[in-house]
Figure: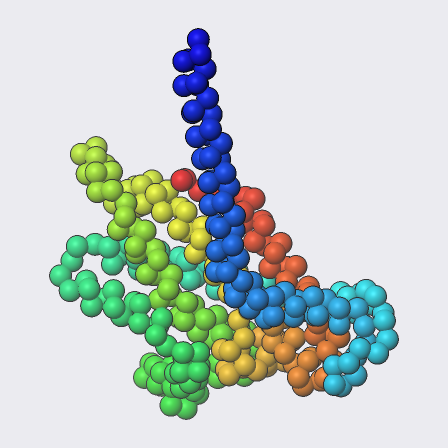
Length: 313
């Protein structure tokens, strides 16, 4: 009996020693985690969380031209914006722009990725051409498309004169100016979307297509019933990223249309910029920034609530 109790006591000591050792390891892990996460949290705090809270604070006041708060108005800035026809118009313009850019970017990216995934001679050249827009800056893209839309020497003007069609000035007509910005943005986003979707399509197992070929399924059937369901997580990711990026589009609008003509392309982001740095109304622009943040969060949550249910993991 004594022998048994002695041997039973030894493992108990080892267990306690192991627990103390694991506790020390966990404490060290927290120490090292704080060291590695500290710089990132500091940067996020200085450049993300503090500006966000400061913007929310300023939106509750009136400000002078230097951005200093003067009079507390509470939700007065938000009420004035929601009741402003110009702001409501900018909101609808932004929503149309976001949905058009998202639809055409994802649809064209999926089409080009599906074509580029085929085993054809010289297909690598087309893959490079489709993804080349990833290396183009916003300024270069704006200059490139300004030249294309030029009513005198641009590509569309030359095509119109070649076929004896009336030359249209894309950037002075409200409707065509919006589509000019949409086309430019889709062209800019297409390279990233194409590469992501191409990688997803190439990761689909070939055995699924081989089984479909044996059953005599057409290529269209394979695309909609094999390819699209298998890459649905990537489609969900791409659409979410494109929507968020479209809400924040600024550079192309500033360099191509500057919100015109007649505010036809005056998106919420550009409106925030103009109200802050042109008009000096920092409280109004801060309220617009908060509203834009809420809109982006709302549409992101909608996507996760409704579209994620159709994603096959």
